[in-house]
Amino acid sequence: MREAIVTLSDAALEAMGFEGLVALLREAGIRDIEMLEDHGTTCVPQIDVANRLDPEGLEALECVDDWELLAETGTGYRYLLELSAAELPADATEDHDALLGNCETSVTDRGVLISLVGSQAAIREMLRNYEAAGAVPDLCKLAEYDGEANPLESLTDRQREVIETAYEMGFYEVPRRASTAEIAGELGLEDATVSEHLQRAERNLLTTQLPT
Image 1 (cartoon, rainbow, N blue to C red):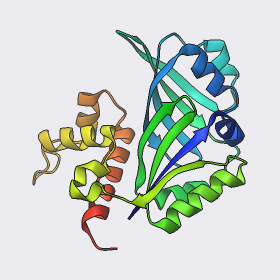
Image 2: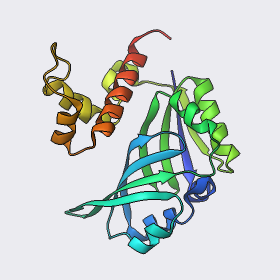
Image 3: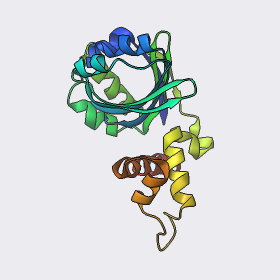
C-alpha cells in the first residue's frame, strides 16, 4: 500500500474545471475543507470560510451543481457544495474507485493538498487523469502508507465519525438495532451519504487488514 501526497495549485484546480471557484473561496477566506464524498469527476466538500460566499457568484459557476449554507459557526460560515470537475476524463471515476481513498484534504497557500492511498498503479492512473486535464500535480511525497499500524488511521474524520456512531447505535449488532436512516438522523446527514461513508470506511479497514 502506497501513499502519495500531492498539491494541486490554483491553476491546476482551474484546469480541472474549477475555474472561478478557487478565487471565490479565497476571497471568502477559506479555512478548512472536508471531502464528504468523492467520485473522481464529482465531489461533495464541506467548506468553512470566514465570510459569506457570494450567492450570485456560486450560481454563475459551471462547476457548482448545488450548494447550501449549513451553519454560521463561531468563526465564520460552513457550506456544502456539490461539484463537477468537467475537464477530468470519464475514466477518473473508475480510477478513483480503485484507490483506498482520499484520506486527507487541506488548503494551503499553494493550493489544495491531498493524500491518495492505494496501490502504486491506482495512484499513477489517478495522477494521469489530472495531467490529462492539464492539471499537473506537484508530488510532495510518495512512500509506503504507514496507516496500517492503527487501522482507523485509514479513515477520514467523517468516515470515522459515521462508523463509530453506527457501532454505538447497534448497526453492527445481530440483529441490527439501527438503520442507516437513523444514523443519518443522528448525524444530520442524508441516508445515502451515510451508506457511502460506511461502505468506504469498511472497504478502507478491510484493505488494511486483508492480504492483497
